[in-house]
Every structure is written in C-alpha cells, then in structure tokens.
Length: 137
Image (cartoon, rainbow, N blue to C red; front, top):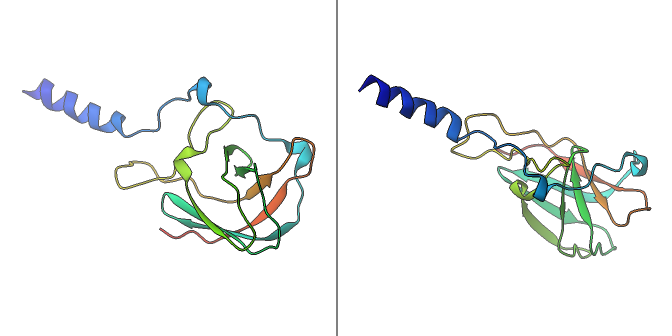
C-alpha cells in the first residue's frame, strides 16, 4: 500500500509541471536586432491565463507576431484599429518549443510574469513596443 501511495504522490507532483519543449512547435528566436525602446498606445492587460490586447491606435496590424518577455511568440489574428482581442498565453512558444507558463488552477508552480510585449510586423521592420498593464490574477 505504501508503494501505491508513494507512486500516486510522485505522479501528482510531476504531472502538473510544464513539459519539456517540443521542437516541432518551436518559434523563431527573438529578433534582438529589431528591438526598440519606445511603444505605441496598445495595451496588454493580463487576466490569469489570458491577455486582453487593446489597440488604441488608428493602425491595423495584420499578420503580426506577438512577442512576450523577448522569448515567447505567437501569430495573431488581425488586430484592427480600435479593436480588442483576447489571447490565451498557453499558445505562446519559445525557440525550444516550450510554452509560456500562463498558470491556472491546476499548476503547482507560479505563472511567468508578463514583463514586456511587442509586435513584429515584418522580418526587417523594428518591433512595435506595447504597454503592459499590471498583472490581474
């Protein structure tokens, strides 16, 4: 009986951990040469496992990639001027295929803090800095 209990505890401790990266799902490495320090009035507001992206500009962003913490990225649907979108942070991956740790009720480790967010609109155009609003848990 002790063995069964021990195995059950070990399973529970390891089952909720962030799995190793999946190279097939890896994103490109962060384009550091395109980083800029300024930002536009597009707010990124964290709400648990999701972010709300509010485009307060007069510009549409089609075929953009969202970069978070200069590591994780994911393709966005068109972000039109004046519109808001909601995105699950679990869809973001890094260059090793690891997921952004968005947290959640069954997670045993703390979620990754969202510190910096940027949009990439082309491979050779500087990134568009976004305004990250405080975390909401």
